[in-house]
Length: 175
Image (spheres, rainbow, N blue to C red):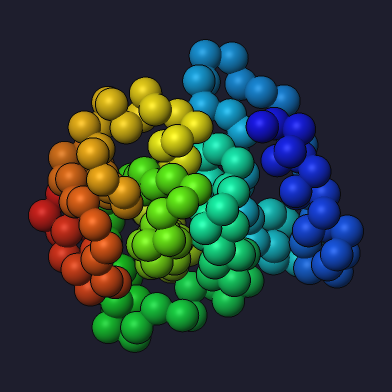
């Protein structure tokens, strides 16, 4: 999967050389989930880490999640509703959103797009899309029986699709 992820990253960089660059970083010791695709923004020469991650190879319907991540980062979170951006400006606490999904789950991309948008709009939010079919131990850990399964700050668990406003509400419950 790591080689396929490297080829995928290089493919996008080759197709859009002015907009996308690709770097392969070494595997971290004691981190069980690989590959990890991080989608970062650019400000001049500096990379901006918005906390958008795809853990596992995004295949099947989750290729849409990768494209959504690229779009959200390139638009800098402007795809969110204005009221959502106003509420996010008040956020001062760290939030981790994990979305467990599978390659054949078409609704995972919908939730991922909202989570990625929140991560780009707020420096306090990190969004992780985890390919549960590649990492079944993650599904077992969170007792995820359906996809998508959303985990916010290890406290709030939601099964199924939710919209942007509901995701923001669930974040407030997790704090």
